[in-house]
Structures are given as structure tokens and as C-alpha cells.
Image (cartoon, rainbow, N blue to C red; front, side, top):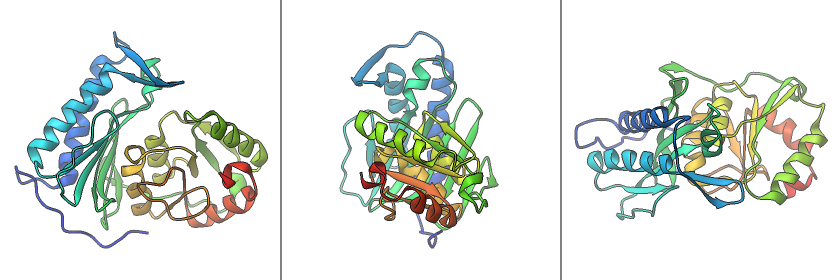
Length: 274
């Protein structure tokens, strides 16, 4: 449910945080598209968990703009050391969500730039540079896709739902997720593995997915998505059904009626017990 609007500080050039976030995401998006399917350097952070030199370039591009516009704010990014300024405001960044897709030439990835106040997201964007889709939300002011308001799925029955999820990099949890999907099937209409948790949450906010879940996410994966889903009229919980936060390692994003059905249908599964 949408919260009351928070009066947010203007940037050094007099812009709102959401406008700065969108510009930072677009700059990173241009880098991503310029380098896409070209010569990139890939290294591994873990089994299946890759990082490229493009991730790092995008991180630099984003942080340069944010530091210029909001020099007193902290920064938390997937690809660099945290910047702690003591401010209650922190920028949360994923310069390339869906790096594995990107590194394999699969055109499904995104950029996350969000602003949190005391660990609560208050403004943020998820940008898909392939389709030029800017999902954006600000606390108390709704969620939009390229300027058009979006809303959570209106479906009422779980068995009619398109459900999205992702595997992540923890083999045991991924196996539990697959077991849960098999437990549900054919109790939902269709299933998709997304490859970008940030886009999965954005699609849930826009009603393009009826339900999205993931068992192992980080603050930079969910920072904009939590706000998008909430401002679109939906709810995000962890796998136990408790309200999702920036620090929740697992998420279920959907409408309240579908959440109730999903929790009932998956009660007792190993994924839910987590």
C-alpha cells in the first residue's frame, strides 16, 4: 500500500531525486547498449555469478552523477565498496541486474537506481535499456512505466496466473524453488524464469507477471522493486509471508488476494520453510 509522500531534498542542480535516478540509469543504459554483444571481460564471483567490465563502467557512470548531484548522500552498490556519509539518505545501485543474460547476449537486463531514507526506499527506477522501459516510483505518488501509471495484477485466481521466478546462485535454495514450482504445477497457468530479479519485480508491479518470487536477493536487487510494487497497489513479503524490506533475502511480489492463495498453496514446502 502506498505511504504518504515524503518531502525529498533537491539535488545540487535543483532536480528531484527521481529525475536524477532516471538520468543516472539512462546513462548506464547507453553504456550497456553500446557494449552489448561486443567484446567484454567476464570474471566469476561464484558458481554462475558473473561480473563484467561493463558492470564496473556503469557503476562508475552512475556514481559520478549521484556524487555530483547529492554529494552528502551515502551509496550502496553491488559492484563497489559502500560510501557511508552518515546521512539518513543512501543511494542503492545495481548497475547491471541480469549480468549473466548480458554476458551471453540475451537481451533481458536492467539498471537499478533507488534512494532509501533510513533503509526505506522512497524513490527509484528500474530501467530496461533494450526496450527503453523506465519503471519509476516515488513514495506516496504511485508507480509508472514511461510516464503511464501502472498497477498490480487484478486476477483473482492462482490457477489463472503467470508466475515468474529466478534460480539465484545458492544451489540448495534453487532446488527448493524448483520443487515448489513442481508442487504448484499445474495450479498456475504458466511459469517464466526471468534472469533479472529487478525486472521480475517491475513486471509484477505492472501486472505483466501476476506473481514473482525469489529466494536470494540483495538490497540493490529489490530497492526500486519494493517501491514499485507497493506504489502499484501490491504487496511484497518474504517467503514466510512477513512484510518485505530492503534487507529481506527472499521476496514474493503480487496482490494481496493472490498472495493469500500462494501462501496457502505452498504451505509446508521446503522453500517456504527456508
